Length: 259
Ligand SMILES: NC(=O)c1ccc[n+]([C@@H]2O[C@H](COP(=O)([O-])OP(=O)(O)OC[C@H]3O[C@@H](n4cnc5c(N)ncnc54)[C@H](OP(=O)(O)O)[C@@H]3O)[C@@H](O)[C@H]2O)c1
Image (cartoon, rainbow, N blue to C red; front, side):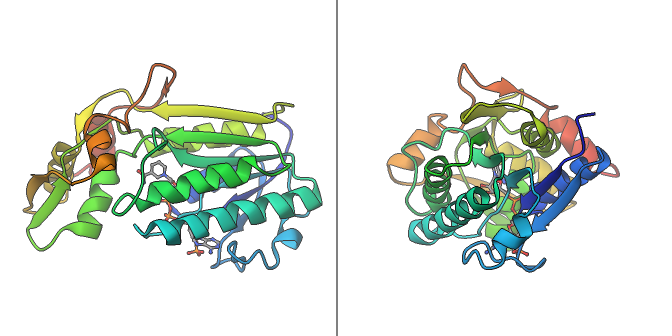
């Protein structure tokens, strides 16, 4: 094990953040969750410097449920800027940011999340604290999130798009490794993806079935340049992407063991 460190996890109560916190603690590190529920609003930065005292590295796993480019850009930019400013003031050694594979040139509603993620990457790399940006593809459970957000009764209108989903547990392992790593590198970028290319609608059908829900999954063609690039595979792995974790089917069997 590396020496005991104190790591702050922005969004440490969320889907990814909680996994990062659990792994760090299991490895014997101290953690601080930076979330509104734990008393830190990262969009204002109030109280952040105090929370970061003695912290060695920060992992940014924050998120916002919005498809509006202006909202997501303001949110992610503010969070990244505040983490950089407070991190610089107290001598944080590294900020690790979770982002998304292939988002360059993508955005505009309903893909506004990507505008925010690019603003987050830009703002974190504009600061003085050394950074590591881990871009991951969509998680295996992403189609389940789509069902939760977008299904209307028994129908889900699912964008026709190929994906190369990744196991969120493997992504959490990568974030932890970057947070505890001893390095003098200033700007690190790593892309990770799962091992298989699949269609998003097929994953949605499989998750609905595993949940025991009757769902009619319609493949829809969204208009616009971003939708066209996404249909052409923009969000999938490229030649430099590191392949990590198991397949969607392995994840599904683990996530829904009684189906
Ligand atoms: N889903 C995917 O397939 C996928 C793939 C690749 C990358 N990602 C990225 O993964 C990241 C994390 O996603 P997730 O699903 O783990 O998010 P999540 O479950 O929605 O959790 C978001 C976290 O952010 C915190 N938060 C929100 N607003 C905050 C604020 N103003 N101040 C402080 N904390 C705040 C929340 O805590 P409070 O509400 O208590 O503040 C929560 O802990 C996202 O940025 C996303 O882009 C997702």
